[in-house]
Length: 105
Image: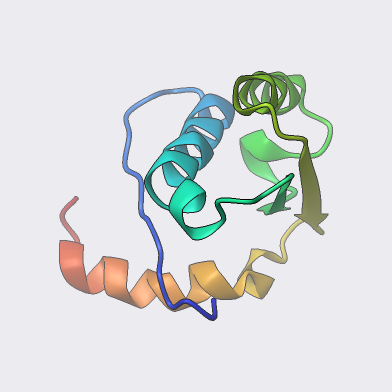
């Protein structure tokens, strides 16, 4: 948040867990490695609902594959279900995404 920088990823996959992890992979490739060149691990804050929930196997499997590929440990902290409005970054981005798309992706 302090950098006031973000990346929005748009896709068409039916597998939300796969899409979420692919979004993380793209963020890491486009911004993360440049911003955090000495990173020893990745910390992710995620909503606990939907396809990236803390109990869903697909989310864990895709994250583990990403961790193996990047050779970095990944830790996920889940917000309680229904509290995704606590995600300050998502909250700040929503109005800009809406203005850009004007209701039409």
